[in-house]
Image (cartoon, rainbow, N blue to C red; front, top):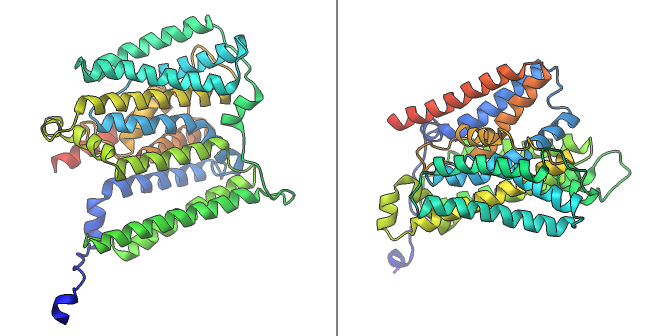
Length: 398
């Protein structure tokens, strides 16, 4: 009886440290690269890179790139590309300026209309890609030209601003301190500790589920080291910014979006189907997945996030300019590829895209501080992007 009722837990296969690193070299390599780049520029700038004011500016300057990178990741994973995101964000920023400045709209209805407009633009482009089978490169290249021209038409070739103070808080505001009078933003530190504990708890629950199902586990030493470094980094970041003005509002928006899209990519049927679509579209279709609808939804989502990024960028500048969004698509696509997304689709992680965006941001910021010209900045970023794609191709051939 005891032999029947008592069941032994399934044996848990153990990873060796070397084997685990080899299998996850893409993810760990990007994190180590970001740390190395930050350390290099921290030394070259005599400590300026990680000063509170510069860290805050780094977050604000890259917020719109991170937001768009989340949407671009899903587009690339699904096997497509979107070259229009910079023009769409610039067009939406121009639309917001015309509605609020020229027609006295409130910021809430303006944001609602602008976000809906971005989703409709994505839907229009996704329709051509999904059901007309026109290559996404061509459709979005056309969209890049169309919306760049429409932004010029809306603004009549001139900058329009300033915006209302409420709208500016989207990109330049900071969370209020619930415990003022200490010369330090206490609320930001508390939030940092809470987030670090939640991230550590979530990672432990995931590991427990893997153990319960008899899945291969990350070596314990590496697991605790990774979680410890992550938690310490979150708390340290919050403490640095707490010594200035605290956490920016847009950082909370970015963090919420990152958690939401990471959940969608890892834990939902929709996310798994998008990866299946990019991995092998024919097999996905034969298995019953409506591939056209999935491709369509990735572009709708991309248009929505491009619109949100356009609003953030316009609010940060406090004006809409005809050149807004110029070159954004290059930084966004580069962030995804540097973060480990595959050019052939089916591979990529949300965290990787965010890390890739900050790699680009730290490089831009650090090179500007040490006086590297814009010409050589472009050269260096291009070489970094090429190296990231070469690594991806090399891994696939192996």
